[in-house]
Image 1 (tube, rainbow, N blue to C red):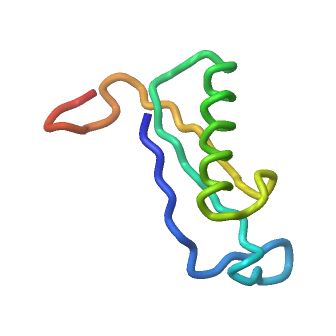
Image 2 (image 1 turned 90 degrees about the horizontal axis):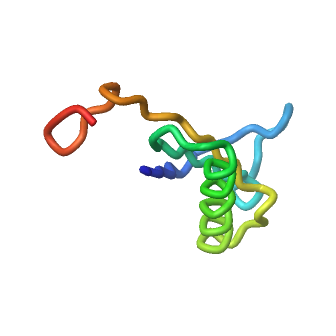
Length: 80
C-alpha cells in the first residue's frame, strides 16, 4: 500500500475559499485489490494518523483508495 499527502496551497469548501486552518486534508492510497472491509479499515487507519499528525478533526480527513491492478503500476524497476 502506498499513501501520499500533498499539502494544498488553496482549497475551496463549497463556494468559499478555506483558510489553511479549515482545510480538509485529502489523502490518496494506492494499494492492491482488497476486500471491502480491509479497504475500509485501511482508510480509517490512515485518516486517524493524518488527523493526529496534522491536528485536525478525524471527520475532516478525506481518504480515497485506488486499486493497483496487476501489471498496471511500475515500481522497484519493474511492473508490479
